[in-house]
Image (tube, rainbow, N blue to C red; front, side, top):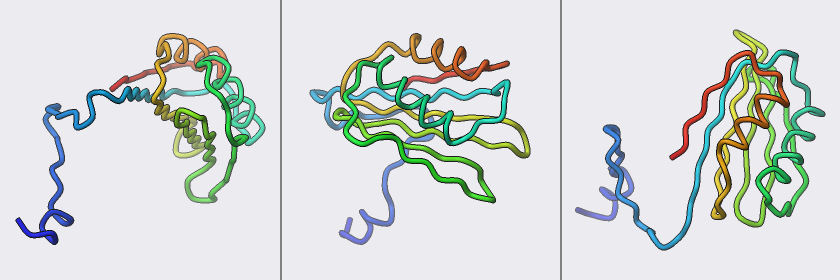
Amino acid sequence: MTNRDMLTSPTVSTNGAYRDLAPTIHRQRLVVEGHPSFLITDEHITDYLRRLSEVTDMITLIDPVTHVSDLYGWAGWIHWETSGAHFYSWERPVSFFSVDVYTCKAFDPRTVVAFTRAYFGATEIVAREF
């Protein structure tokens, strides 16, 4: 395989099989998605991400940053010493949010899901840890 082949033909797992290339480095990922009971604003995103830092016991390096797109809705991000979290919110075609948490420090995913459900008054919520 040439260098060009390695750049253009990466190995991507689509069947659930995945090889951990750094088993000695702790990495934890959690995606939480749901339907909020109110319209989410940049103030909500900023406050949520700050409080999420407390819930997960993470050290904040940069205060939350938000951006709104006329096409895709709100986005937010917070940088932690041990990685960070992204937040996305749509108003259309359906009121919906998605949170991606990635850390190199362990946290309790059940606590994050419970906090997120309560914070947004989610009428429906799902989560996946990987």
